[in-house]
Length: 196
Image (cartoon, rainbow, N blue to C red; front, side, top):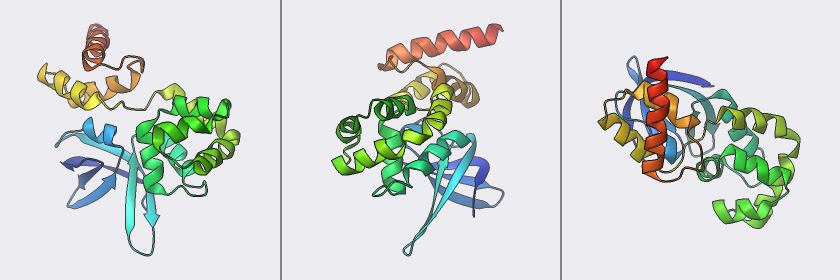
Protein backbone atom coordinates (compact mmCIF):
# COMPACT_ATOMS: atom_id res chain seq x y z
CA UNK A 1 0.00 0.00 0.00
CA UNK A 2 1.27 3.48 -0.88
CA UNK A 3 1.64 5.76 2.16
CA UNK A 4 4.12 8.53 1.29
CA UNK A 5 5.46 10.15 -1.85
CA UNK A 6 8.24 12.65 -2.45
CA UNK A 7 9.01 14.05 -5.86
CA UNK A 8 8.62 16.82 -8.43
CA UNK A 9 5.37 18.16 -9.84
CA UNK A 10 5.17 17.24 -13.53
CA UNK A 11 1.51 18.12 -14.22
CA UNK A 12 -1.05 20.18 -12.29
CA UNK A 13 -4.73 19.48 -12.88
CA UNK A 14 -7.80 21.02 -11.25
CA UNK A 15 -7.93 18.54 -8.41
CA UNK A 16 -4.92 16.30 -9.03
CA UNK A 17 -1.18 16.40 -9.66
CA UNK A 18 1.26 14.06 -11.34
CA UNK A 19 4.33 13.63 -9.17
CA UNK A 20 7.51 12.37 -10.79
CA UNK A 21 9.84 10.31 -8.63
CA UNK A 22 12.86 8.89 -10.42
CA UNK A 23 11.30 7.41 -13.58
CA UNK A 24 7.77 6.85 -12.27
CA UNK A 25 4.90 9.33 -12.28
CA UNK A 26 2.02 9.04 -9.83
CA UNK A 27 -1.35 10.75 -10.31
CA UNK A 28 -2.52 11.95 -6.91
CA UNK A 29 -5.86 13.56 -6.14
CA UNK A 30 -5.57 16.66 -3.94
CA UNK A 31 -7.89 19.50 -2.94
CA UNK A 32 -8.41 22.09 -5.65
CA UNK A 33 -7.07 24.85 -3.41
CA UNK A 34 -3.86 22.91 -2.75
CA UNK A 35 -3.43 22.17 -6.46
CA UNK A 36 -3.71 25.92 -7.15
CA UNK A 37 -0.76 26.55 -4.84
CA UNK A 38 1.52 24.28 -6.89
CA UNK A 39 3.39 24.73 -10.15
CA UNK A 40 5.27 22.40 -12.47
CA UNK A 41 8.77 21.84 -11.07
CA UNK A 42 7.81 22.28 -7.42
CA UNK A 43 9.21 19.75 -4.96
CA UNK A 44 6.51 18.15 -2.82
CA UNK A 45 6.02 15.50 -0.20
CA UNK A 46 2.59 13.98 0.23
CA UNK A 47 1.05 11.61 2.75
CA UNK A 48 -1.12 9.19 0.82
CA UNK A 49 -4.34 7.27 1.09
CA UNK A 50 -4.49 4.37 -1.37
CA UNK A 51 -8.13 3.78 -2.31
CA UNK A 52 -8.98 0.46 -3.96
CA UNK A 53 -12.34 -0.36 -5.52
CA UNK A 54 -13.58 -2.87 -8.07
CA UNK A 55 -13.31 -0.24 -10.82
CA UNK A 56 -9.98 1.42 -10.03
CA UNK A 57 -7.17 2.28 -7.65
CA UNK A 58 -6.58 5.92 -6.71
CA UNK A 59 -4.15 7.91 -4.61
CA UNK A 60 -5.23 10.86 -2.45
CA UNK A 61 -2.47 13.11 -1.14
CA UNK A 62 -2.05 15.62 1.68
CA UNK A 63 0.85 17.87 2.70
CA UNK A 64 0.68 16.76 6.37
CA UNK A 65 0.04 13.47 8.12
CA UNK A 66 -2.63 14.95 10.39
CA UNK A 67 -4.61 16.20 7.40
CA UNK A 68 -4.48 12.67 6.01
CA UNK A 69 -5.84 11.43 9.35
CA UNK A 70 -8.85 13.75 9.08
CA UNK A 71 -9.49 12.53 5.52
CA UNK A 72 -9.39 8.93 6.71
CA UNK A 73 -11.75 9.75 9.57
CA UNK A 74 -14.20 11.22 7.09
CA UNK A 75 -14.22 8.22 4.75
CA UNK A 76 -15.08 5.97 7.68
CA UNK A 77 -18.39 7.79 7.99
CA UNK A 78 -21.36 6.04 6.28
CA UNK A 79 -22.08 7.62 2.91
CA UNK A 80 -18.73 9.42 2.62
CA UNK A 81 -16.31 8.17 -0.03
CA UNK A 82 -12.86 9.52 -0.91
CA UNK A 83 -14.18 12.01 -3.47
CA UNK A 84 -16.77 13.36 -1.04
CA UNK A 85 -14.16 13.63 1.73
CA UNK A 86 -11.84 15.56 -0.56
CA UNK A 87 -14.69 17.90 -1.48
CA UNK A 88 -15.40 18.54 2.20
CA UNK A 89 -11.75 19.38 2.90
CA UNK A 90 -11.76 21.74 -0.08
CA UNK A 91 -14.90 23.56 1.10
CA UNK A 92 -14.28 23.94 4.84
CA UNK A 93 -11.23 24.45 7.02
CA UNK A 94 -10.49 22.00 9.80
CA UNK A 95 -11.31 24.68 12.38
CA UNK A 96 -14.72 25.19 10.74
CA UNK A 97 -15.32 21.45 10.75
CA UNK A 98 -14.26 21.31 14.41
CA UNK A 99 -16.70 24.09 15.25
CA UNK A 100 -19.55 22.25 13.50
CA UNK A 101 -18.76 19.11 15.49
CA UNK A 102 -18.50 20.90 18.84
CA UNK A 103 -21.71 22.87 18.30
CA UNK A 104 -23.45 19.85 16.74
CA UNK A 105 -24.34 21.87 13.64
CA UNK A 106 -24.72 19.47 10.69
CA UNK A 107 -26.64 22.12 8.75
CA UNK A 108 -23.37 24.04 8.30
CA UNK A 109 -21.77 21.11 6.47
CA UNK A 110 -25.01 20.58 4.56
CA UNK A 111 -25.07 24.20 3.34
CA UNK A 112 -21.38 24.72 2.62
CA UNK A 113 -20.47 21.30 1.21
CA UNK A 114 -23.77 20.35 -0.38
CA UNK A 115 -23.93 17.14 1.63
CA UNK A 116 -27.21 15.41 2.30
CA UNK A 117 -28.62 16.24 5.73
CA UNK A 118 -28.31 12.66 6.98
CA UNK A 119 -24.71 12.40 5.81
CA UNK A 120 -23.86 15.71 7.48
CA UNK A 121 -25.47 14.48 10.70
CA UNK A 122 -23.47 11.25 10.59
CA UNK A 123 -20.23 13.20 10.20
CA UNK A 124 -20.97 15.55 13.09
CA UNK A 125 -21.94 12.68 15.38
CA UNK A 126 -19.18 10.39 14.17
CA UNK A 127 -16.39 12.94 14.69
CA UNK A 128 -17.35 13.84 18.27
CA UNK A 129 -14.74 11.46 19.68
CA UNK A 130 -11.96 12.79 17.43
CA UNK A 131 -11.84 16.42 18.59
CA UNK A 132 -8.22 15.95 19.69
CA UNK A 133 -7.20 15.13 16.11
CA UNK A 134 -9.18 18.07 14.72
CA UNK A 135 -7.54 20.30 17.32
CA UNK A 136 -4.05 19.19 16.27
CA UNK A 137 -4.74 19.82 12.59
CA UNK A 138 -6.51 23.12 13.22
CA UNK A 139 -3.55 24.40 15.20
CA UNK A 140 -1.24 23.60 12.27
CA UNK A 141 -3.36 25.82 10.02
CA UNK A 142 -2.77 23.56 7.04
CA UNK A 143 -5.83 24.43 4.96
CA UNK A 144 -5.67 26.52 1.78
CA UNK A 145 -8.29 29.02 0.68
CA UNK A 146 -9.80 29.13 -2.79
CA UNK A 147 -7.93 32.36 -3.62
CA UNK A 148 -4.47 31.06 -2.73
CA UNK A 149 -3.75 30.11 -6.33
CA UNK A 150 -3.93 33.83 -7.21
CA UNK A 151 -1.88 34.70 -4.12
CA UNK A 152 0.76 32.19 -5.17
CA UNK A 153 0.91 33.67 -8.67
CA UNK A 154 1.29 37.21 -7.28
CA UNK A 155 4.11 36.18 -4.92
CA UNK A 156 5.88 34.30 -7.69
CA UNK A 157 5.73 37.44 -9.79
CA UNK A 158 7.47 39.28 -6.96
CA UNK A 159 10.33 36.80 -7.02
CA UNK A 160 9.52 34.53 -4.08
CA UNK A 161 10.40 30.85 -4.34
CA UNK A 162 7.84 28.02 -4.21
CA UNK A 163 9.28 26.91 -0.86
CA UNK A 164 8.86 30.40 0.66
CA UNK A 165 5.30 30.64 -0.65
CA UNK A 166 4.27 27.17 0.54
CA UNK A 167 5.58 27.88 4.04
CA UNK A 168 3.65 31.16 4.21
CA UNK A 169 0.20 30.28 2.79
CA UNK A 170 -0.89 27.97 5.63
CA UNK A 171 -0.31 30.62 8.31
CA UNK A 172 -2.28 33.42 6.67
CA UNK A 173 -5.37 34.37 8.73
CA UNK A 174 -8.52 32.86 7.26
CA UNK A 175 -10.54 36.03 7.87
CA UNK A 176 -8.52 37.66 5.09
CA UNK A 177 -10.49 36.55 2.04
CA UNK A 178 -9.45 38.97 -0.70
CA UNK A 179 -6.36 38.30 -2.81
CA UNK A 180 -4.93 41.77 -2.12
CA UNK A 181 -5.31 41.33 1.64
CA UNK A 182 -3.68 37.93 1.66
CA UNK A 183 -0.80 39.08 -0.56
CA UNK A 184 -0.18 42.07 1.74
CA UNK A 185 -0.14 39.84 4.82
CA UNK A 186 2.10 37.29 3.10
CA UNK A 187 4.58 40.04 2.22
CA UNK A 188 4.71 41.12 5.87
CA UNK A 189 5.43 37.56 6.98
CA UNK A 190 8.02 36.99 4.27
CA UNK A 191 9.70 40.26 5.14
CA UNK A 192 10.01 39.20 8.78
CA UNK A 193 11.41 35.85 7.74
CA UNK A 194 14.06 37.41 5.51
CA UNK A 195 15.17 39.72 8.32
CA UNK A 196 15.40 36.92 10.87
